[in-house]
Image (cartoon, rainbow, N blue to C red; front, side):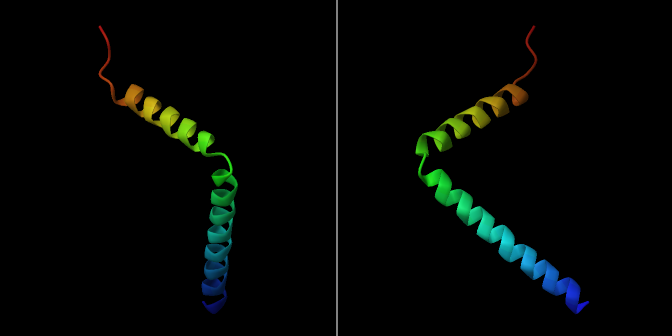
Length: 53
């Protein structure tokens, strides 16, 4: 049980470090963030739009 909790804690720390590193890398390219946001928004709009006739 203790080993399982330690592994979960370690994975959480690693995931946090990976997210932080990715955010730092993306901060160097704000245009990629904007492009990704717009692409995701367009894809969502296409999926939620009613079928055409």
